[in-house]
Image (cartoon, rainbow, N blue to C red; front, top):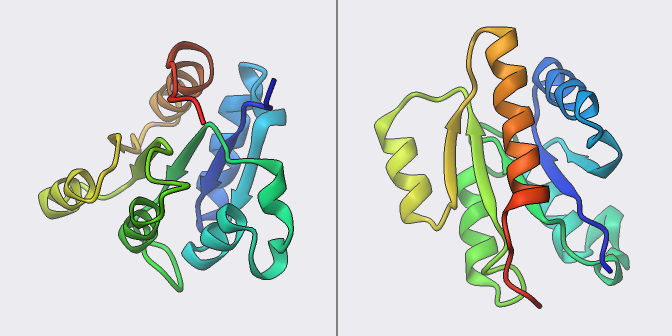
Length: 145
């Protein structure tokens, strides 16, 4: 049985802390790896750079991907994931503070499985993240292989 995990790609330390706290509250914090920019996320997923050799560890169950990232944007990361056979079906949830229609359309056009706007209220933010964690790790049935 493979380890179910989340790859959180988030450059804002405060949002990262809130997300990890919300997941910890529902006992999912032990299944979260963090990348802080787009290039680091790709290196993690493809076992390159600082993560060379990591590809033997398998892919996360879901990627929570911010759009506004340093080095490579979330939409650029998404495009790379969808272009590679190994990651083409990997569930990707865009988790962003953007309320721009072009970002929402670009996310879905690029192959995102979901687009979730980060609520401004802490309680709502925590509840949204908790629901995402439960859905993607416990409820959703991902493709095999």
